[in-house]
Structures are given as C-alpha cells and as structure tokens.
Image (tube, rainbow, N blue to C red; front, side):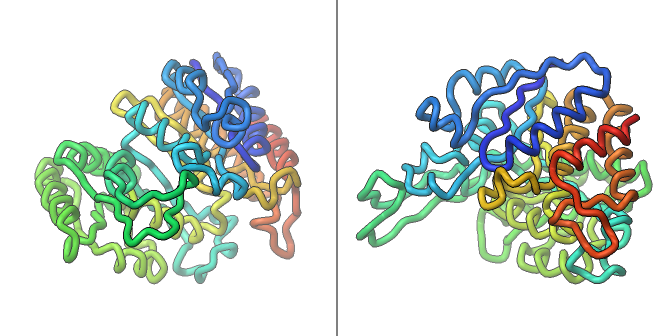
Length: 361
C-alpha cells in the first residue's frame, strides 16, 4: 500500500512525524515516500506543487498531507502561493468529496466553547464539494501588479458555477454516507445547505439534490440556508446528521463545526475521488506562529491517518485501533496546550504521539 507523505509547512512537519510514527507500529505492509509541497516546495523548486510531488501523489494509493502556508508567502503571485498545492492536488486527482467529521469525545466535552448539554454526544459529518463553486470559477480583475493584488483597480469578481453531474455525484456521496451512518444508529438524514433565495447557482443545487433524494427513500432530506445553518450549528448542533454543501460554504461551516469539539486540532478530514483514492489531512492550517515549538496537537493528523486506512486502504480494524488509542490517551488526561485545562496533564507534540503509540500496545 503506497502512501505519499507530504508534510508541508509550519507545524506540518511536526504533526506528520507523529502520524508516521503511529502508522509504522501497526505492522501493515505500507510503503511511505515523502516529498515537498507548499512553501517548502516553492523554496526548493520554485513551485508549491512540483511535478515530482504531483506524480508521486498520482501513483499513490493515498496521500497523507500535513499543512501548507506561511505569512511570508502572502506577497507571491497567487498561482505560486503554498495553498495552490491543495487546489492543484484536488484538481489533478479529481478529489471532489471532502469528509469532515465533527465528533465531541466524552473526554473533551468541557473543552467545547458551547455548553455541555449542547455538544455531549455530538457526531455529525460535513460533506463539502471540492472541485466546483467559486474557488474554481473564472476569476476576473484588473491585475496591475504580479503579486496577486489590484492596486488602482475599480472592480474584481469571481464566477460561481456548478454542473448537474458535479452536484449529483456529491449528493450520492452524502446520501450513501447517511445510509451507512444510519446502520450504526444515527438518524439517517441529509441537510443540504444552500443560498437558493438569492443565488441561482444554489437554486440549481437545491433542485438537483432534491432529484437525487428520490433514489434514497430511506434517508430524510431537508434544506437549509447557509446563514441559518451557521446559526444552528451553534444553537443546536446535534440536530444535524450529515450536512452536504458547496465548496465555499463547506469551507466555512466545517471550521465553525470544529470548535464545537473543543479544538480544531482534533478534526481529521478526507478528500476522495471516484476510485476512493484520497488525500487525508487535519482540518487546521500550518500555524506558523507555533511552528518549531513542539506544542502542536498531532491528533487530527493521526485521526486522518485512521480515515486513510478506512476509506482508501480497506484497513478498518487498523483504523479502529488508532481511534481507540486516541480515546485512551484522552481518558488518561493527556492534553496538548490547545486542549489543556486544570486537572489534565500538558504534553507536547512528540509526547502525544508517543502516548498514542504506547496505547496501541
């Protein structure tokens, strides 16, 4: 099983080291190969997604990704910024479905910014469409400089678009995910989030999702405007089961949902194509302000590795072993600084990784 390991920038190298450490003790036939991506790749090769890295990713069964970005690259022309590596991988590998679970572990219920009764038992799944929407629409602007900015310009705009096949395939993913979750005891409901009251693109989205729903009579469907969804995630998050939405709305809502769990440092994610080849990464960014300090939380990356084993490598038992080990170290009271509170034990990045390895037995 070939895995492309792309640590990236900032804390990416630190958290990736711990995920790799965990994978290596599982006793699985894994072939891990590391390559540069993001700002690190730009420094070495002049591009955030060099041809060698892209070829490695295409040939792999799965990609384990750290994080990219640093403020020092903000003046680069947009196509050369570290974040373009993620967009390039999504486009070249056809990674159209982003899974972002938001689970509040019992051990962390008091770390959430919301009251205990609102998040206790929280288990929702946000499915974000990744290859359409405004991020991939045609940009328009009067680009005077080459640094990605528009000094002296009068206007700039980006086009939002979706095609029927794009919406249909992400809707099928959402309904199938809800069906699988229902088999394990969840409600079996999809909430499609849109802005159909003002955007033609999302009236179209709503119509297509409604059509696809007819093929899943066992799964309930409701529609919600994105502004209301943002409010309900804070007001009553447990009312959701599976949320499916477009690229931009999904980007925003999944980060909002991350704070329900106590820390964005706990949230893994998976981006899959039609062949279940996937890119797995923590939902957080590169956090250059704490890079090199050994305080970053590696659990989201470790849990992303578990998702990789489950969805792309068909290693369900190994995935469950990792998730159980993470629960065990949380029960032991170990916390990185983002989760630390009185009565728990503060540990660093490497210490948390070592604890997960130990918990795996």
